[in-house]
Length: 258
Image (cartoon, rainbow, N blue to C red; front, top):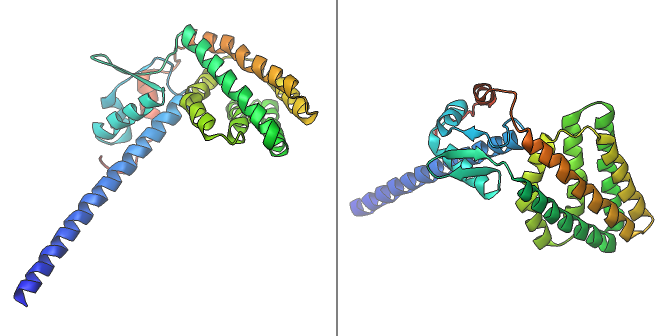
């Protein structure tokens, strides 16, 4: 009986140690995910300038965490194309060259035009309804001079096409560049927002009239035209904020350490 009790106590102790280890692992994973998401949002929402150096030490202090979850977050965002990690130099917000922008827009044009074709063939009515809602949101934000709302709704308009194409490979491929596209959109200095609304309506009208070729042509022109806007944005990618102000604006996470 004593042996059985001893074994039982040993098993219980091992169980609790395992539970503690698993608990710490889950907390660490959760903290890493939250740091990653906050940094992602800071890049997508143009809180950081394109090409801006990021200090692991300052980010860790801003978040109130150790450098480990920050380092893990930067590595994860590197895989999304939002961070460049340069050996012996540090981590930087991505800043594409003009050639990179041209290739990005070409890739995006191929993906979205093909997605439009797939939506047209199998999910035209559903896609049309969602495109109309998204463009209504774009126009509403434009009328209220809500640039952030406009950018979000504009992104939604284009993502509607990809979400409804019913091709997981295309969706996954588009995700490889969607973060960079969103960041460049939010950094853009374009003032001709009304033109985008008109072109969105042209795509919607062409789909409604079952004119696939016209819809494709408008969408292709609409995307490739953004190449010029993105290039201007990258050339002027000098943040008006100081690095200290940006780091101090990052919300401190509630968990203590990682």
